[in-house]
Length: 74
Image (cartoon, rainbow, N blue to C red; front, side):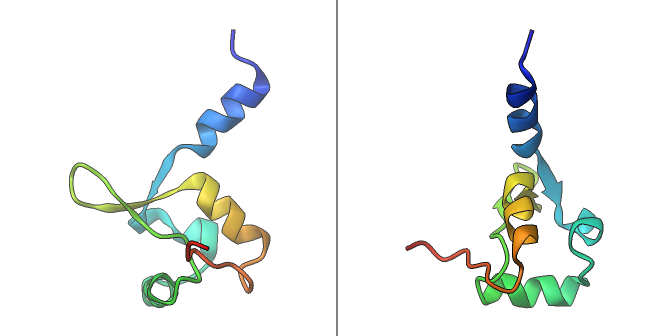
């Protein structure tokens, strides 16, 4: 049986399609696109179908402090 922590970590590894971001962000598509280009939003992951998705754990991290978020590598 999995622990609550293991279940939570698996949930955070889920991918959220670009088309389903609004409930997580409250932002429109063009605002998200601009933030991706400016590295102020999590960077998308290309799925096997070629569509863009986002890691739920990255979105949760962004939600903590959207105004200070940076996806650039240090």
